[in-house]
Length: 419
Image (cartoon, rainbow, N blue to C red; front, side, top):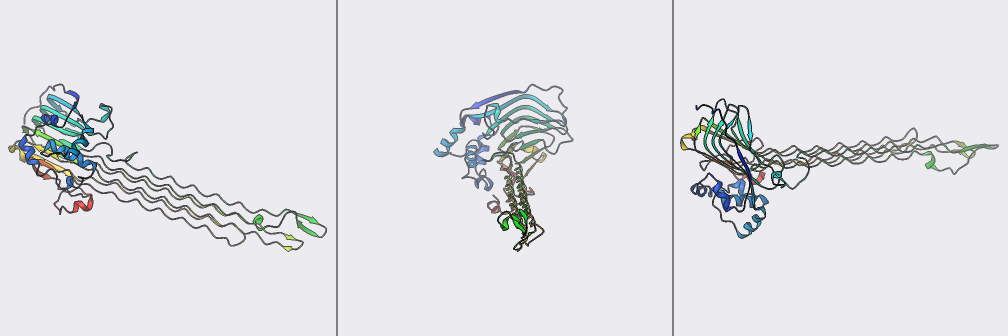
């Protein structure tokens, strides 16, 4: 194992604009032969299935520069709105990542006053890159090009040395937090007004009412209905793991590369329905000159509010291809691991509000009807693991979306059922 150099060089960082896709290729570490080989496997099922989506346009643009692909006139026109390309470049003769340290080379849109939905690029050129024990290099959701002349990895190693990780934000057309907020609970219904005694006066022939004898004076009023619970917001889709090209000219030690797109957000729980208000109490009817007035009836209870529906779970993020090249004699010293992105959990439907009690003590008014429980949110979907190619040979990520993230071969038809 080579000794750790005592001195690091200064990292030269620039933020550049690349006018066209053709002018992007000179930054790559791959050769024309590499890109020719890639053309046959670039659009594997996990990539091809999204060809008609907006991401499909970006896939074809990337294929035109990272592989061999002739863009249509329509695609060129559509991609022009994303030009110039925005790239962060880092150049350093010697970089040592200290023990336990993580070097995050990512860039976000605020470097150019852009929103985070714009595709951004990171280009890293390094002479010698040393990983002390437990050190890592990561990029979060940028297209990543790395050319390293010499890489030295010291033991004991972290779980991975190079991490191709997702954007720290959702990549979808929604708004708001990744996890959907819960719905507001429904307000309870109001209790019904109780009945009141008749206004009675004594006369020499007996009691009489000073007002018309109407049942609604003695009866309790109905309780009002509880309000429905609010809808839980949908979880958003997970962040995207974007294309990477990593070129290592010389490797000392062993290296592990890890990639996984972001987990989907959880759906918010539906709000509970409000309870119905209790019915008002009836009052006893008085004796009047003409006889006994019927007792007032208790008011019926108000109905309970329905529970709000739970929000749908967000699906896991999508991923692009990852290409690693290194000397043939180092192939037994690289380990690659890619995992399917996990869906979020669906929001629970809100509980039903209870019906209000009937008024007392007279009459048989019904209790209010309970509301209906809200339905649970729809489940999210796992997305396929990024496919990692080492020296243009796929080594992991089979294009099958599985929630447990394993990469055991299955029939590729499964992807169309899960995407």
